Image 1 (cartoon, rainbow, N blue to C red):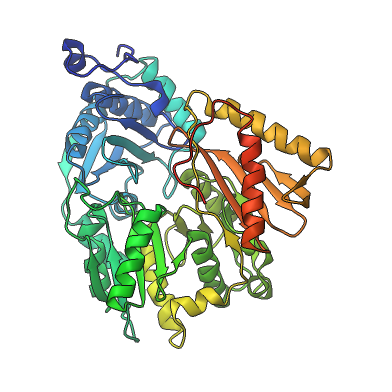
Image 2 (cartoon, rainbow, N blue to C red):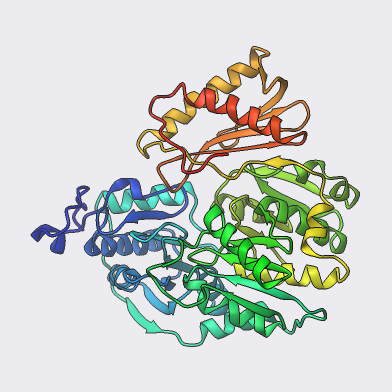
Length: 498
């Protein structure tokens, strides 16, 4: 295989013939490109050949489950990827249009070692990418992604005999059966089902009906133009829309899903948008009653309550704060035998005996309904209000180019660590410690904190702050962290701010 070209110019002779891949598309734990500006179809075939070569190199049985999300270009991209996989001698099991967790489920259901899911996840239209993994329930982490990148960009993909193609029917039904099991609600529950016209529209309403939930539909027609908003339950636009639907319908809560269905967002009966890390604490409280002394993993963007909540302490919970990113979190949950992992972005990793360890927004939705069934005298807002009060920002992302962001972050981490070492204050309080497992989480003497890290899949930094004391302190933490960020001229505007 020849090396792919790194410059991608649509509407040229070369574009239709030669593999072109922008190198920055290889991220920490998946691959993302703007299509067709950053990758073309021959480039996607080169990626498939590289992925197949990586499987053979690692001695993995040459069988893979492949799916695609519901976007108008995803099928063409999947077919180009499949061509490369077959070229590498891989037996392809095509499961058709799917959610990412349905593709992960297919690894278990079809008993195949590998998965490749063509999806741009929650990125807006114009993006594409692949989530892949060889060791269920895990997906590629930085080491596997670096190896794949080198194979592809250095033209080291190797053709091999034995490639084949099979379209596999029935995986969607098996996935829904697996999610619902024999569970049926024993209390009436009315849920706004928000899918933003994305892939989850083909799954979530049916799943809720199966478990005996009354569905209030919200943008549940499949429409890959996303006419209302981009399905992303971390974006305030979608959460506000869910909140309005709850208030208009008198629903018990709203559950919303991103473009590939591996994340779930929650709005309670009062229309209050509960950030996913707080939902995680509510679920951890409930699960730790059933499974005492459980370990829960939380990402560094998440609330400090996993470590400080008196209820979790009473149930013997061990909290483990780890790197943000679905691959990092899945691996950590598996490594330390945690019952679940919770990520601020809405990825939840429910391990045996609750789930299979991969992130599945549908599984989370079912478990939230089960939790409300186990607490029939409590509303979602009651469960929220039972938590100790904290004030947190949404996830805020200032622009920083992919080629610059890690060097910029290194300098910011050094500046924040230096502040701590010099005994300087942040938001008028002493800095207790700076956790640098993934960016810098600056923890104050009262447990309040501010975080800056690099986004793994977009050209941005990521900033989150939480105060255990007041909204004013939360704003002061953000102001002081932002003042440090502004010392770096390569950092641009925020996508949203407080």
